[in-house]
Image 1 (spheres, helix red, strand yellow):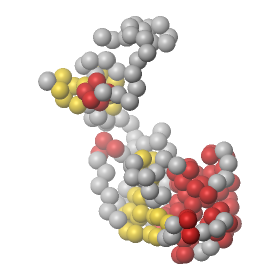
Image 2 (cartoon, one colour; image 1 turned 120 degrees about the horizontal axis):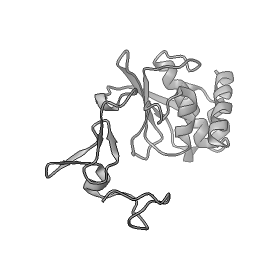
Image 3 (cartoon, one colour; image 1 turned 60 degrees about the vertical axis):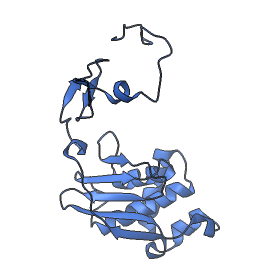
Image 4 (cartoon, helix red, strand yellow; image 1 turned 135 degrees about the vertical axis):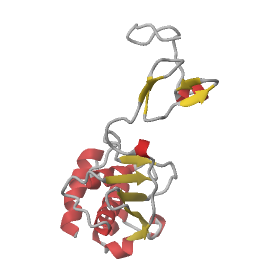
Length: 193
């Protein structure tokens, strides 16, 4: 098991840029989840969808082990702020949630502890049920429609109906960003009103 962990930790380190405690934890958690679902981390598992509950180093370890990614729509981010993930095998409808058994505050050298301790000591594995909306599954977009206000394409039924118009979420509710210059984008192209 330690040899497999080292192999995937090397892969995760390349993806992440360095090896830190969170990356080691994510790698071990990912391997434990894959074993629990009887999936081979050395093969592409097209029916695997992973929900990570934190946007920290752990997520890159999970990604390196599972091969799931945002671009393939097989890695989902759920903002819980927890070092945990749910691995869901869509073909069997089986899912497990993996999380650390103990707080890292109780451990001296976290990296060494997670590299050398037994999986049973480190990882809590719970069987869980997951409901995935058809529009959230990997594959080609289920729908592509333009926003009635800005004209940008909205995929996978993410539009919002407002006063009879289909709007993207930024147009309907406001965005996390705001344009600096009105009337053109940085390429100089005119923006839709």
